[in-house]
Amino acid sequence: MEDLSDYRKSYEKSQLLETDIPEDPINLFQRWFHETEEFGGVEEVNAMTVATIGLDGFPKSRVVLLKKFDEEGFIFYTNYNSEKGKAIINNPNICLSFFWPSMERQVIIKGTAEKTLDTVSDNYFNSRPDGSKLGAIVSAQSDVIPSREFLDDKLKALEKEYDGKEIPRPSYWGGFIVKPIEVQFWQGRANRLHDRIRYQLQDDFNWKIERLSP
Ligand SMILES: Cc1cc2nc3c(=O)[nH]c(=O)nc-3n(C[C@H](O)[C@H](O)[C@H](O)COP(=O)(O)O)c2cc1C
Image (cartoon, rainbow, N blue to C red):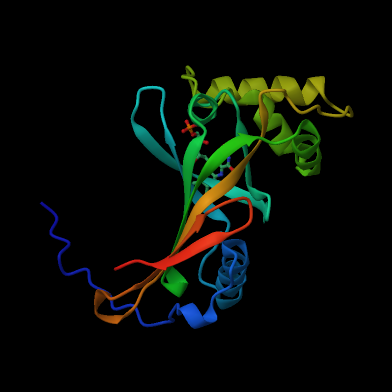
């Protein structure tokens, strides 16, 4: 038995007060994102956990990389036939979360996901290095495979096939854009009395802002 009860840390880096927040959560997300980048200590600030409801009814989460965000939503790229891809197509209600320990911050975003336009996926796919493009073709993500060699052999064969040629985006690979309906900001504070501010979308433009008990 590993006893972890002595793991204890006081959070004292910052605070989140109503007097200092914008009306729109995307602005606050942007502020926190850049503050975390500037503060340092988080290698991939854009790494986020994506939780989906699986075809089996169980929630499941995994890390992916956020590649773009703006008023329209949050975009990440994946294989549409992967376990998460199939889950999202079956149930587009998903949750994204970020933990930025250097700033003692967490952001939790509830929203609905939909495939990005083909042009958006094409532009991003075409910006990737050839190795990543071929990787996307090689990997039938989340399928069972016989061995590591199976992947390496497939990659070698594709490297030959596409030598000097343009590598097209496979139709089963692309982006999802997550349109937020709720965004919660968590700032660690002393004595476990953390700041939690929740934004809930009321209509197309207006967000209700409330403070939650820690
Ligand atoms: C730091 C990090 C970044 C990742 N980025 C992505 C990503 O952008 N897209 C992706 O499909 N998987 C990414 N993965 C892999 C996923 O966590 C996951 O293993 C994969 O997408 C298959 O998930 P699924 O079987 O639940 O569909 C990343 C993993 C880590 C640890």
